[in-house]
Image (cartoon, rainbow, N blue to C red):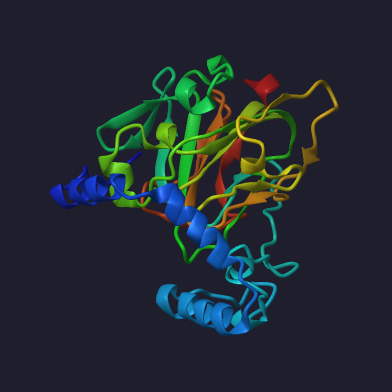
Length: 292
């Protein structure tokens, strides 16, 4: 179900140049600039962002870019209440974020598709968490560009069972890099979360990228403040979030990977790599684990 082309020579050259950049230093500098409350700076940056990337603020909490106290506040803007009504079908699996489908389909054992001709290990992605519940399961990867709404939400209702912060690089996750850098999502910083749901365990993995120095969760705050965080939750201990409730946010463009067990989802017709999606949009229909 991945229709994107293989990496071009230009993709490989861009990836090679980016590989040499001090991406963590650049991300730290961006972190400070993006949080500056100085009106002369943040207003110029906010207006530039809207012009450069064509941000649509009609659904946002504030439609005026200068109403946000910092550049980062605009990037991590909330939606206004009622802007994204959820589907009535209780079995609908929804998109956790706005963005573009990078890859979608089914695992080959414990292997996922990164891009055409490139696979990577689920075991590596989960970083020590057991991949067995997802063997031959399903996955979707969504790339968030700078123009997208940057909060991510629960694709299905569930209770947090485990979380792992995985320190790593902050390489770009732009489509050209995804096509050219093998194991990209295994190299980058990420926060692995497992959720107990009506269809069994579901993994939601936000992946960091250049200028994304802090992935935040609604239950724990910035995950980078506790590098290597590893927590498991007993029955009823982890936070419960309903479908569509906010899980967290990025500070610039990045990626979210969702992984499900085998036989629990039928992907929506036309859901292919390169298709834009919006948070709350139906990605597929779920079947309960006890109905398989």
